[in-house]
Length: 216
Image (cartoon, rainbow, N blue to C red; front, side, top):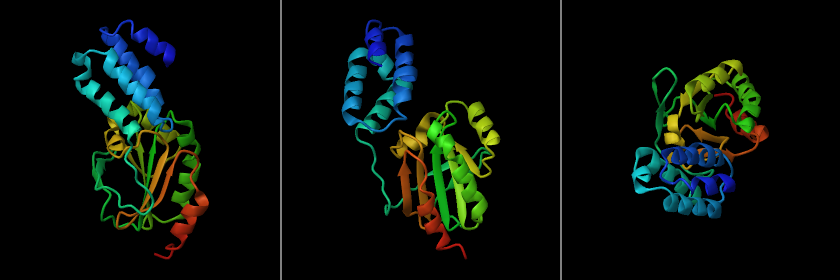
């Protein structure tokens, strides 16, 4: 990134430089753990390097917002209430995550290019096979950049549950989710009873929570 940014700074008025910064410098770093100092420097570079005519476009404003979320991410934790969000599934139906008839909803923020995300698909599949749909709804929300890769991965990995496509990361960014995988388990009231960012899902903890209500 340091080498790329030095080169791009030599051509700040070239829109290709702006796009390259977005796609090849910023986008790959958004999926790694938060480092506020690094992102403060990145935001300063972005503002100093590219002209306002680029930064004031829709794409330009989104870039600034993505970086700012990494500097001061929204902090949610177990015990918090999930914000009142909704999204469309792959069939175009609107999914609201409050007042679900299921006892629990497990939200999985992922992407087909994310190795750790793909690695935990078997765990999610095991949860789907173990617990009833009345007890547990699984919702995977992809932040892939194109729907073709996302849908292909869903089919190849036999992900037989609800799916949403968060094009542009609008939903995940609104929650401060700028790195994946992210897992959020909600109870029927929308309370977060399990939250994990990065690494593999804690199957022992998830099973303990769900088995407590397995007779539901």
